[in-house]
Image: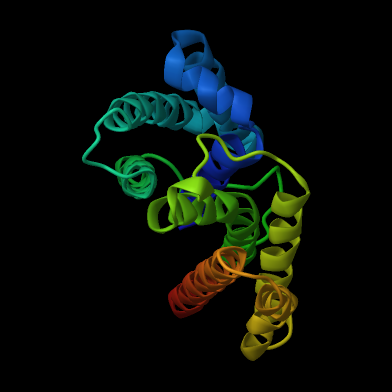
Length: 241
């Protein structure tokens, strides 16, 4: 579990935190952008596992290779009119997670997969899961909401690339606060950060009211799902101990 979470954290950092809109567009149209992107993925993963690279360097290289192959597949999939952006995104992320799980399964007989460090420290699987969850709801959550809005909203809502603007930052703060309240204080407080958006939505006219409600609902679902996954990791690791 520890190695898997570390690999996934590297994926999240490279695929969302350090992948601006210009790089997204570049990797979809040329080899240079793709190579830069997978290089960033590799650097993020290597940085997280730097203290264990002597035994895990081959896993890092395999993670880069798997990510590259999946990116090629999903870039081609985006050209298919039968698939929505949301469908391609879900397929893409499912393939990435599956590939990392396979890598850990392959590495288990040969490497100490549960005793690897994270940035040279050993915070424990639960806290690594919380870190993954926080990055997920803040950065990946923006993309999920973007794709949901594009998929179910009217055409005037649609955009090709999500800008990093004030509205996106506000949403990141909203979801990050919701997750931290659920993890650190009480699960029921997960709804609290979304209430101001809902209140503002009801003061707007359609279709903006509907768009804001879609954003709030999707954000809450993302946070709830992520909190449940953190809880599962915590229960699993506690049982294992």
